[in-house]
Image (cartoon, rainbow, N blue to C red; front, top):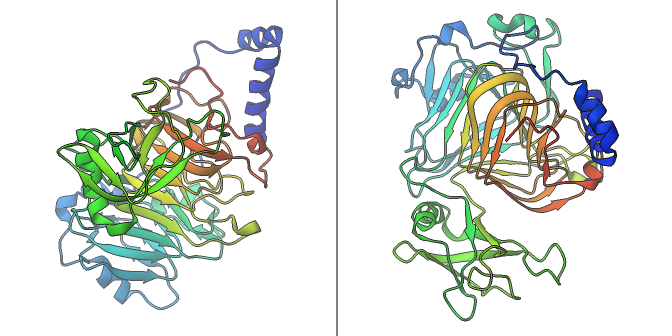
Length: 431
């Protein structure tokens, strides 16, 4: 908290007084370099996974068989050096009341169609997910009510307290020395997350999104049946900041790139025909890989949270995921997507995800460097949304991201989230 507040104070000093700004800048070290070494308290990849690849996964070790063999009142474990495959293809639900610990690899092939109900999920090995086939979806639903601690593999025994472990809070998806390799969208298609509003019909009942978007969005819309939603951001300057539209999709035409809506758009949103520069943005609010959570806590504002925790030098990929009701308002470090004190993670990417109804922030980079945050959509969120937490983070890239309906937080964490900014970038050594 102290580091975060310090970073915010420096930002305010820079903006208020040019003389102070020059004085602070002159004290910075212009030759400062990224820290790529592993420090005490950080997690490293497990050595017993050195030769483990997705080719080692087979139908002989499945996630359902591991669940069946797990003793009652125990956390399910995928042992280091082994790969478990998800073989459910019928939309069934697997319940892990005491959580899941991935020391080896958990692989979701494109054929997977399943819901996992989880107290928590720790990733010390690899969570690998291929884009689901059209008609399929995978949901992680976080249900835990108690704080949980990670007692790490012996390779990382020094990273946590030997008795109490490392507290990860409640309903955590926590990466500690492990790898996320999640591809929720077809990699052979451009799949833009958002575009500009164009209306091909006179009654605002259809939206032209272009063929590139339509080809990819159609796969998602066809997979989630009647629940697909389109966001049209506010562009009606006389109507206030919150004049957005969320419309249910009726159908989509790949050949013409047109999305048909259940009901016409009301009001007079600006289209590309009216003003190409200031046209409203249009985004699909759904994905086929979904992270969701129950709610509890203060004002029912505690959902799940996802953190890459003190894991330097490991490439993380989180692409094409829908994250709903994550973040725990008022608790420091509990965000929908959070890189925490991981130093250099060159090659890591957070791309083309949707973050909806976040209780606290969106994408938070803290003490971590060289991450690509690109073409994400954040809607109806609380607190600063795309954020560098301390202001000491460097060489991260924020590109083509969209934020809409950024609310102030009611319950603070010693910061300025009660005056929330969609983009809170406090160090110019980022892109």
